[in-house]
Image (cartoon, rainbow, N blue to C red; front, side, top):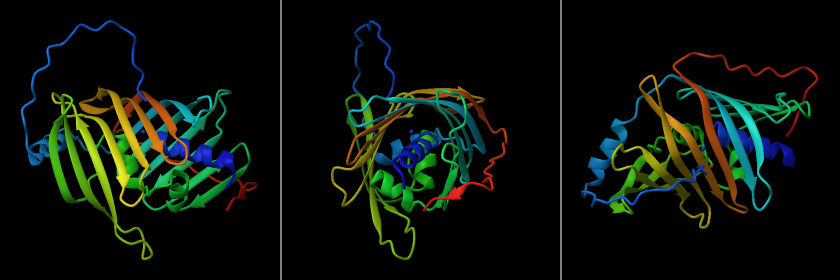
Length: 271
């Protein structure tokens, strides 16, 4: 796969898939209160209680993508999501013409490159090669909605960490196919002690030291009673650090949309 394809797909996945933009202002000193100790079960229940299952989400996104020491690249995108089913993305660069379209389902990855007039049809093993770690639809959807990854718990702890609650979980990932063996995922979640929204989340796969995925949720927004991210940042630590900053704009909840992905007859398939 060409370098341009890899960049387009990775941006699409993580945007339609997950740093914040701090404002410069004076801050008055705050009197910090000691947080009440709570058990893992208590904190997990409070985190789960804030979830409000939605059927559809659509939003316009402002995206900044930076790989290594290179200058950040700015994109705009339109995202549509149907819960537990599909994530659809339309990528628009500065000139305002659609450059790529991406569709992610629970078992497939599709990319239409309008600039090169070709397309890719593949599985999530393609994303593994891009991100150098295992990824799937469940993880991407959870991160985009500001939720935790809810796999089978093997071990768990909870503690107070710098005026936030920290949950640490070891989880068993579902076996993707007959070739893949059992995989264990470590998830660390820092919770806002007042709202129990996720402030930061770290995912790392056992057996892959030095490689992880970090998400920072700097701000949330409420739409029709639902709480979703407003500003988020994704950091991939692998061969090169990748930073993707995302702002959700004009988000709509539970309004059905289509997910068009039509391959023109003259487009060529890329392997």
